[in-house]
Image 1 (cartoon, rainbow over the protein chains, first blue to last red):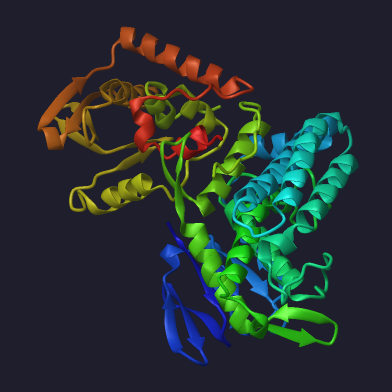
Image 2 (cartoon, rainbow over the protein chains, first blue to last red):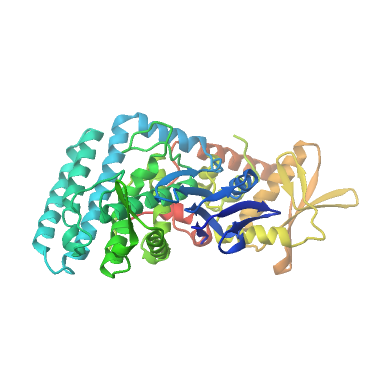
Length: 336
Length: 165
């Protein structure tokens, strides 16, 4: 499988003959193996020439930009669509415009999201020192919530269900993490006001870009989401699908980084009104995330091993099959 | 819809693939088997590659035997013989419509085998039936459900078809 490339240092990216050359201030010149590159993450200050962008587009490589100082996600260079099918795009639009169809898909996504949170809680229930009763109570709540999802007839109701679930879920983080330096307190975004929130925000923004990169490899249009409404200016389908993968990819990673003490207080910087992961912290986070995405598991439908990253692509395929009305979409459910 | 040799080829292997192709849904382009196929195409028969494009057909090689035009179609194996036969028949028929009468030959260099394929009124009728059926498949609003066949193992659509759970 093709690789993801992360650039943290300052430098210049330009086209050199039939390849891309990165001239880093720290490491000097380095060629980028374009045929083997899936997507590119720019964290450092990188000057990128137009000819290199043309080349990246030709090689179908998405480029995700992050602010160097804060690590905030800035945007994606999403090359010209190379996979086009009139039929798929019309069906995707149809499932957005037909409100009942849209609600049905949104419901499945919320179902997937809450189920995955349940999986994470199940995993930690027997591994923690205290709080098992609290976790069991929330798992029971989730079960009832999942049963009641069928009654929701509006997107807003579904969004609210998800919001409530997430609140309960976050309230258990202190039991799972058990580290005074990383209290949950409350969810704060833009800007995150404590270390744990900084981790969640950073992890989620990465999750959105991973799903976006995978969407690029399908016939789906990332601008038409179902749970998140479309305004045609920003991507939203990736936000939908990320709901299902955030708990098992991002949250599980955060817990393991903190519980194994791979990240600590030192890896965070205090800014005037925000607390953010330092560059060193971001590197550790990304290295472990990349590792996690490469891990493979046996897939029952396919009868062979697939990586966690591939699972995301398969999820998009399932959504496409739902849109083509060949098979009803059922969200992925982790089996551990 | 313009029926092409690719549709004919897959008609005898997987009707679902015919539908997907007809709707412009290509297989996973990063699939290793596709990569391998492209590599073989680029790097074999370099010296005597005699591909000829006419209209919307592309034949592997053409030679003249006296007054006769012989169209050769090279295949890796005779595993999908029926597909190969009809594909070649489709070429012969297309050429005929352009006013060229030709005889066909399926070549299996690795198996050291060759097989004659000839255009006849009877076979033409069968070909027409296939073409008509391909049009029918393409018109279906929903793709035919996947069926697990031997071909699935190496098919670049396999993840798409079998993604579930």
